[in-house]
Structure formats: C-alpha cells, structure tokens
Length: 577
Image (cartoon, rainbow, N blue to C red; front, side, top):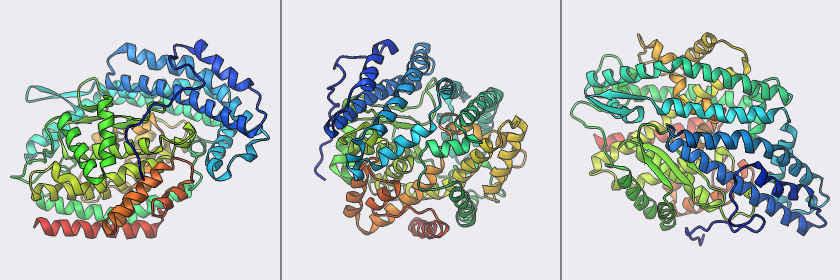
C-alpha cells in the first residue's frame, strides 16, 4: 500500500471552516438543514450523506477533546464542566435529529441504489439504531455519560506514600516487581488500603450506573441491559451462548497453562505459597526491567521500533508527535488507564497513558500505537460511519502490534537476557489475561441479568466468579477483603459496560496473526494494513478474513492457539536457561 502518514484534517464543505461548537443554538441550524433538505437523486443522497458525515466528525472531535482534556487533569473543574455541558446540554439535543436523519436515509427511494457492498454494514447499523432509539433514553444516556466519568475523578486522586514519597497507584505498581518480598507485601497492603477508602463511594456510584442502565433497557423493550447492550454494540457475529462457551474454553484449556506459569513463578521466587503480591515479582538478585527513563524516551524508542517494522508506522507516530498528540507519564490528578482516542476531523489520534518506566508500559505503548495505525489507515474512508469499526477489530489491531513489535524490543532492553525476559513476560501476559477476561465478562452477564441486586449479593457473585477462574495455586487466604473489591479496578465496568470480551476474541486473533507473521512477515503486515484500511466497510468476519485469519473463538481454536503459545514460551525458557 502506497500511503503517506502526513495526514490532513478533513476539509469542511458544509460547515464553516472557523465554526466552533459553543452551545446547541449555534449547532442546531446545520441539523435542521439536513433534516429538511430534499433529496431528488442518488447523487444528492450521496452528497447529503457526506454532509451528515461532516457534522458527525465535527461533533465527535469536539466531544473527544473535552474528554481528553478532562482525563489529563481530573482536578480542573472547568474541564469537567465543559465535558458535562456537552453531555447534558448538547448531546441530548443531537440524538432526536440523529434518529430523524437515520429514518430519512432509510426512507429515501435512492438508498437501494447505493453500492450494496460498500454500504451494507453501515445501513445494517442504521437500521439497528432506529430500532433501539427511544425518546425517554436521551436524558438517561446523558446522565450516564456524566456519572461514568466520576470514576476517573475518584480514582485519579488515589495515591500512596512510600519511603516518604508520594506515588500514584500506577507508579506504586513498580514496587510489586521488587525481589524484596517484605517490601512488596507492604506496598500491596498500602495500595489495597487506599482502594478501600473509596470502596463505598465506588459501590454507590456503580449502583447508580446499574439502575440507569437497566431503565434504558426497559425503555427500549428489553428484559435486561445485557440483551440491550448486545444489540447496541452491534454484535451481529456472535451470541451470549458463544461468550459462555468461550468462558468454558478458557477454563478448560488456558487456566491450566496459567497455573503452570504460576508454579514456575513460585519456584523462581522460592516461596512456599504464591500470594497476589508475588505475581509480578522478580527473583532475588534480579532487578525489574527498566526499559526507559521517561515518557520522551518511551516515545522516541517506540517511533524507532515502529519504523523498523515499516517506515510508515513510525511516520504515523512522528506525525502525532508533531501535533502534540501524546500524554504518556503518570501523575496525580490524571485519570487511570490508557487509550487511543480517534479524532474524526484531524485524523491523527491522541494517545493517553500512565507510564511509570515499566515493561508493561512498553506493551501499552505498542498496543495504543496499533490503535493509532488503525486511525491513520481508516481516515481516508469517505464517511465517518465507515471508520466506526467494531471493537473486536480495533483490539485486533492493537494486540497484534504488541506481538509484531517484539522483534524490535532490543531498542528497549540492554542485552539478550533482558530481551528474552521481556518477550517471555509478554507471552505470559497473552495467556494470563484470558482468565481475567472471562471473569470480567461473566461478572457483567451476572450484573445485568440480576437487576436490583444488593451490594452484598454483588460481592458474593464476584467472589464466586473470581474463584472459578483463579489459578488454584494462588493463595488468597486472609486477603478476602482485598479480593472482594478487585472488580473496582476495572474501569470498563464503570465507563464502557460490556466492552471486555472483545479483548479475548482479539487476543486469539492476534495470536493467529503472530503465527502468520512468523511464517511470512511482509505478507502478514500487508494483510494487517489492508484490514485496518477497511474500517467498518466489511463485516467482522470479513475483516478477519482480509487480515488472513478466521473469526473463530471456538474451543478448538482456543486449544490450538494456547498450545502454540506454550511452545513459543518453552523455546524462550530454553534460551534463558
């Protein structure tokens, strides 16, 4: 593919170039024009769709910047108020117009003249949105958007003091890698104690979120929010039963491998029992990996790693750097987690993360960089809706890049021993994430099919599910109180409900991509780029086929790919010994 990373902001033709959204009053006339415009031909319909796409891009980018600025500084009330204003005073007015525009499109006699292959997934999504729209859900959705962001404000303030220095919880995680067990146990308890301080606040916030989500489902004619959300997320290619079968496959084929990894860790550490604060620890005499000193070094080495894979990949990150589209280092007052935020008009996305100098941070940067490539490659597509690819595809882009980039991790690690350790940890992570994915997804199924449950019932359900998928050789004795609120660490539960099984599906896909990559690197990268460039102009199964793999999370595929990873890890163990 002959591409340039010198991405250009989409030119405006319908909305004035200098237009800035200030309130609903200055935005409404554009929606009104679209709603009342007469469409007399296929050409006029396509021009109308382009204008709809333009206003969608303008609105989306405005909302994204409000959220980006707020997550970068959760302590600035003005930024929070700006985001809240959009959610409460602008977005609710847009939704009835969006529904009217969807209906106008589907009612047009010229819709059947649109290219069926290009527009199939878009029109399918439009039909779904029409079916789900309900006037009473507009205000509820606005309230949910504001409520969900409280999670970042609450957790962004969490910090602990270690050796007379204050650390965010992300920064404190480095101490859990130390070989000094006494030290890491003490830090573990400090972090757990800090989380407990906000346990009730987060529980009460979650109760509010659950109640409003359930009401949205009822308003739309669904028995529960799970069934509603499956429709809203456009899960056309798999069902609840498929998810349940996936959970069972993880338990059967992957959990035993994770238990083997934990046994290996226990022998490395020479401890009688393995505790939660031992999982990330280094053996005595071995320091934690320290691949970079600060965010600038992380970025520069990441650009070089991407460039070595393909010059275009590095150019994409350089373009973002020139636009100041990174906020990488952890600090107090910053929301937790990491994300790549696509910017519909600008094209070059924004990467946010909480780097603290660890090997995990390198993986996060590779992951978010994969998302960024998806934004660049899909930007030339004609309509904004074509770029709204499904999360199962988005995560395939990011998780595949984690694995592809391992060939270039020598840039971060000083010698072969460190490099082998980093690669081993990545493959361990690729396996060990599956039980956690099953836990979070199964817990969400329980949460939303048991509306009105009490906080005690929720805790009991969590502990039961966590126990089901936890390695049997990990000892939680005496730490039950910490274990009972582990779910509160997962921001997806608060901010993006039901967005988690996608990681499991995509991780399988990424492993298949890596297997393909090890056989034919250039063909795999060609397939990767082509699939990402399609946005959502193909179905999910078709996108995976374009990438050169199958959309398959059956038991047989879980078993086959887990065996592949096991063999690759064994080769690394032998190299290290």
